[in-house]
Length: 180
Ligand code: PRP
Image (cartoon, rainbow, N blue to C red; front, top):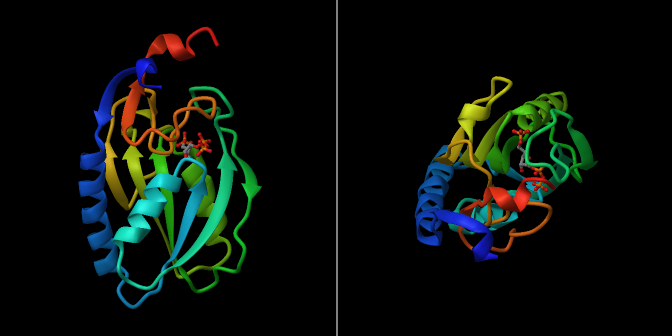
């Protein structure tokens, strides 16, 4: 898989260090609130597992699957719900855990949808923020790293379902996804 990468953008050590800081921030902000940590499948799974293990406050888990990309490298703006939460979120503090915010379509749709179920609060925690690519206004509440407009894979992020199991985040060579 490494031969398809132009370079490693963020090492495992850098990811681990940043996650520790984010976990400490969340521990502080959600003390006594027992937040419901919602993973958005599948890209967020590595970040989710590492972030939750680094947090020390009591919390709960749930999962959602939403799709906006298909196998393309650019968001279409279409958002599809594939799997919903298992339980009611009324009165709960929700933290949406994402791998990346790009155009912002997915998260703004999700936020709207979750707020209609009357939670106490909904915040977004993303590992990566491709803020240059935003097409709708959306500001993550917690974020790991700002990145430029490059196609990144690894640590949960894929291209056509590949590269998710790389331990670090790399930039994919253009030739891998061009003319596909
Ligand atoms: C990615 C990512 C976000 C979304 C962000 O998911 O996990 O959910 O795209 O893009 P946006 O800000 O342009 O809406 P993807 O649809 O690739 O699914 P995956 O997590 O299963 O890889």
